Image (cartoon, rainbow, N blue to C red; front, side, top):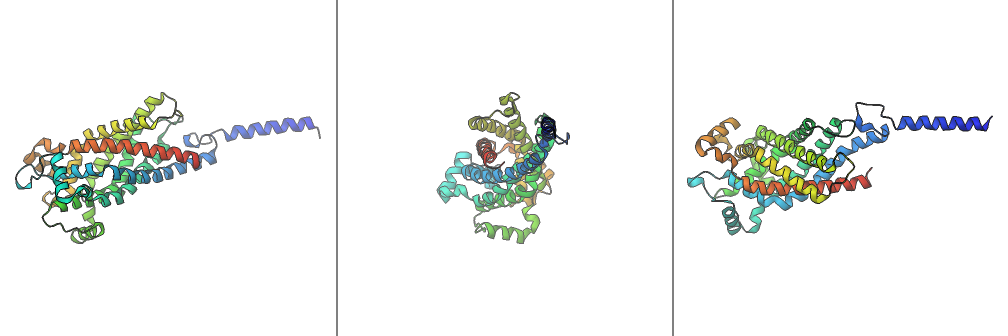
Length: 332
């Protein structure tokens, strides 16, 4: 057989195979670009990577920032005046807590948030990465509406599967500490009492305001974060964003979410406290707070929440991006 002809045929077939492998057989699925089998595996892995990186991130972040969350919750639970008014401000809350319960009194309820922060962060980032992969265009970009949608989906998922039970138990623990005779002896004891007294719904109080809060939170945060990253990259998706810059963008995203949804956070906190029974519904809570404490009551705890959230989101995105970069190197 003619060796020249064989060589010509081999080159043609190799060229065809290469062309097919580099072509996306599913144009509606841009994540399958550059080799359908490998890209499909990558598309599946990205959600799992997000879950693992998010879980680790959540545990580290909450250990750093919990005292500000404690102070914020105490101020939101504080009445306007009279017997229910216990603190005059942030510093008063800190000093009274340290004086009566020691420095680690500022970490009361940490175990509740720690148990919940790991799955919360895992669900948030896993959901965002999964939804994002399905919304990107052929160039791997998201428009403004899709950024908001991806963040909203992440927030709703974390609200339902992690945040509502975690936040309800946390608020009840902190609220219990304010009473003359605290009855919760520990995490599992407290949860068992809550379920015994209120049933399973006792750990799902305030689910609607929590969905509103987390949905709007993550929609705002991911939108701001992704927009700032796109601006920094200038159209080059492969350009690396330094971790310090990621932290600064995260702080901006956190601040935007605080000013956007603190009123929802206040209603959520009231609906999850031990005195939630005095409100017929979230709407009734809004009406009562407005009538009895005025509109500014919906921004109680804004400053401690602002300091916590800016630090929280900055740290979270820096740690998360670091782990995702590591996974790209060791986990194709």
